Image 1 (spheres, rainbow, N blue to C red):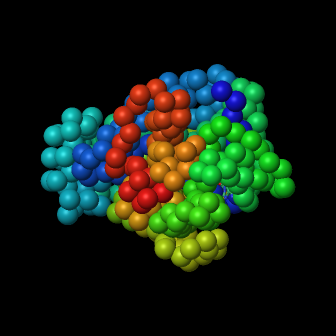
Image 2 (cartoon, rainbow, N blue to C red):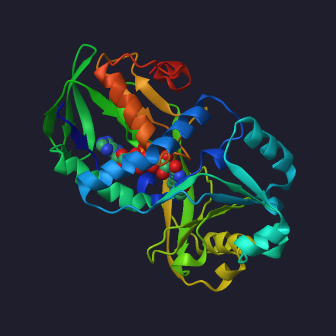
Length: 340
Ligand SMILES: Cc1cc2nc3c(=O)[nH]c(=O)nc-3n(C[C@H](O)[C@H](O)[C@H](O)COP(=O)(O)OP(=O)(O)OC[C@H]3O[C@@H](n4cnc5c(N)ncnc54)[C@H](O)[C@@H]3O)c2cc1C
C-alpha cells in the first residue's frame, strides 16, 4: 500500500502538538460505553506501538505508565461513584490514605485529602508527532506539506485530491483534518457537525523527578514531560471558534488553580503558553469509518479530548476498514449517524 500524507504539519493551532499527552481513559471516562472500551484498548496498545514507532523513526519518545493521581478535594461530589466505577470495571487503582499520600507524594497540598492512584499513562505528544512524521518518511510514504483545497470526482468516486494546484491520485482517501474537517468536507458537499473547542495551556519549569504522576484536578491537570521539559498545565475548554489568542490572565488562573493542589507551582518559572483546538463532534464521539456518500472516502476525526490516547487504536481501526479485513464497524462512531 502506498500512502501520501497531506496537510500543514506545523499548523500552530493543531491539537496534536498542543495536547498534554495524557493517556487517561479512566480519569476521562465515567461510564463503560463503547468509547471507554476503545480508549482502554488504545492504552493497552501504547507500549508496543511506541516501541515500533521509535524503532522505525529513530526519534525517542518519552512514555510513562506511572499513572494518575486524583485528589479527593477535587472529586468530592463524585468520589463514591468513581470508586464504584473503578471497582466494577476492574480498573487498576489504589486509594491512598492521607498518611500514605504524605509518604508517596509529599509535594501535594495537605488540603487534597486522600488520593486515588489510577493505572494509566503519559506520553510526550510533540515527540510522538515528530516520530510519526519521521517514521512516515522512513517507510517511504509521501509527506506533502500542502493543504487540500479540492477534489477531482467521478460520480461518487474521488479520483484525486488537489493541493497547491497539484493533483494527488489515490484509490482511498481519509479525511482527518481535525477541527478543520468541516471546511474540507464542505468542498465535497458534506456538512459535518463538528467545531473547535479551544484549550489554553502552559508549561512550567520544575525539577524532572519532582513528580512522576499526572495530577487531575477539577478544572486543571498537571502532566510531567520529563527529560528537562518541565510540567504541562492545562487546560481551558472554550467554544470560541478558531480564536488563536493566548490570554495572560487565563494562564495565570490555570497556574493558580494547579498550585492549589501542587503549591510548588506558585514559584515555578513559566516556559511557554499556547492555544490548541480540539475537534468536537456534536455528540462528542469520534467520527471514524466509511463515508455513505463517497465510495472511497473514510473519516477519522472528532477525537476531541482524547485523540492522543486514541492514536494506536484509531490507526488500527481505520487501516482495517480500508483493507477490508472484516473488522466490525463501530456504530457509535459511524459517519452514517450524520449522513456523511
Ligand atoms: C489543549 C489540548 C489538550 C489536549 N490534551 C490531550 C491529552 O492530554 N490527551 C489526549 O489524548 N488528547 C488530548 N487532546 C486532544 C488531541 O490533541 C486531539 O484529539 C487530537 O490531537 C486531534 O488530532 P487530529 O489529527 O484530528 O487534529 P489536529 O492535530 O488538529 O490536526 C489536524 C491537521 O489537519 C490539517 N489540515 C487542516 N486543513 C487541512 C486541509 N484543507 N488539507 C489538509 N490538511 C489540513 C491541519 O493543518 C492540522 O495539521 C488535547 C487537545 C488540546 C487542544
